[in-house]
Length: 123
View 1 (tube, rainbow, N blue to C red):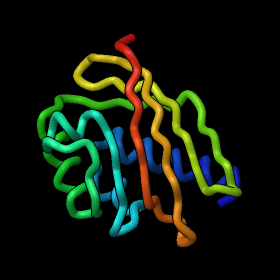
View 2 (cartoon, helix red, strand yellow):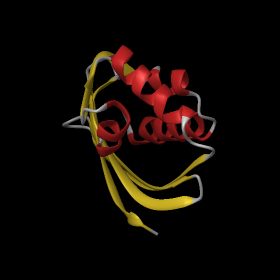
View 3 (tube, helix red, strand yellow):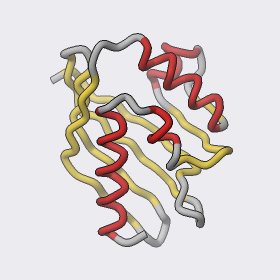
């Protein structure tokens, strides 16, 4: 993935989340993805969700409980040698804002194979 392709990925990712289009987001994830988030523990009782179907179930459950969602990307960091991306953004969910960073690792086929989410304090 080039820097330009990384920017396109983040644009598509942000647009899909802002429309609460879980399936569009999932299109970028590998079937055996490992996804770690503090929100997952709250929503589904475990911090690391493994597999695309489990991730789908988690995200659909999480989205069902929110009124609105808006992600505004601050910056991205892309390392082509390790195929790792960090997306730093402001998340506004139900009027509550916080800074978030998502670390994504891409497999050779361009799909996300692992991800971890870090939430900051409320803004």
